Amino acid sequence: MASIPLVMTLGNSMLIPVLPIFEEKVGITSFQTSLVITSYSIASIFLIPVAGYLSDRVGRKKIILPGLILALLGGLIAGYASWKIEDPFTWIIIGRILQGVGASGAAPIILPLVGDLYKDDDEKTSSCLGIIETANTFGKVLSPILGSAFAAFLWFLPFFSISIFSLISILLVFFFIKVPKEDDEEPEKFKEFLKKTKKTFKKEGKWLYTVFILGGFAMLVLFAVLFFLSDILEKKHGLHGMKKGFVLAIPLFFLCLSSFITGLKIKGNKKVMKWIVIISLIIMSVFILFMARNTDNLVFLLGLVTMIGIGIGAMLPTLDALITENIEKDERGTISSFYSSARFIGVAAGPPLMSIAKKDFLSVSFIAAAAAGTILIFMVMKLISGKNNKADQAEA
Image (cartoon, rainbow, N blue to C red; front, top):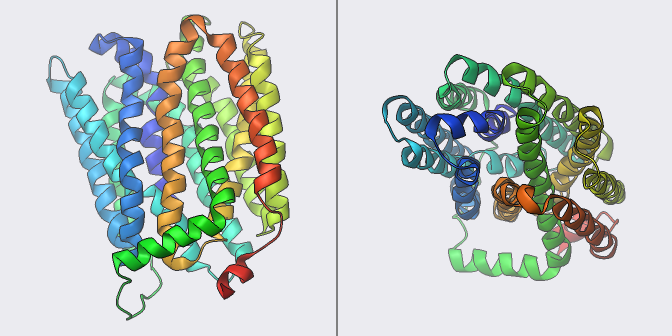
């Protein structure tokens, strides 16, 4: 299971350190370059809820495998266009959109699948979600190194490598993931399902919407900061290729470590989850604010980004667990898909917003992000309960 978020993360994050190379080779602007990331995410945003609904109706594995196949094909299209077509930008974007469509049916379905496999064991669910999120963040650690290494050999090789990784994941999922046996009952009709989903949002909407916003905010900050860091390492500090990849991997390593440790510690305890989210937001807000003051000193900048990464790393598996452990099985795919869409909105918005802000509004953008984090702290304190209510939901 962990191979899926790993592959999907590589499919996006691996391109971040080589975006300046794409800009030079394809002859496009910084904003157009950011669309290589954004196009992938926008396609996912709209289709993830559809994939979540279908996974609740026809089964998780039947949605995951076609999604991985589409991701494979998208990589081939983007790679071939970069290799053989004189003006490949449009075809690269088409390939990336196809990858985003595939991603919508793959990585987001893992969260409800974990809930299905360990539905009676919150501690094991939390631990497994920690591993899943660690695989996601480990992909971010590997991404700048692999992306820089592949691009140093051939600038368009990262696109083809995504297809290779997708093929490996397809084989692992096909042969090794054994989903729980489906009930023989006839699937719930769409009108009944929609009514039940509306009831869930009406009852649990306050904390669910808060979790969705938190997921989007965390990914927006992460991808905006990574886009900024990748650009500044090359243009201001003269780091290129593998050197830049290893430097980018430093804060991402600590993000990965933070996710792994958090997954082991939360153990289905909602009060602990709530405080982890609050502390994570405090860390993120404080160190984002410092970024508004000084980005010239490389060691200081890396320290700030590392601390932001630690905060995000602790938050992500906690948000995953809040969703997975507090929503019933027959709605889990759909509800978690809205959460995944919110995260992809953050991924899509981060790079283009930073490409605009870094010209004239860099300090203002960091101050605004810190202010948003502070507002979210109060929202978490007010709207997310620290009481474990899964039993209550089962009785409802």
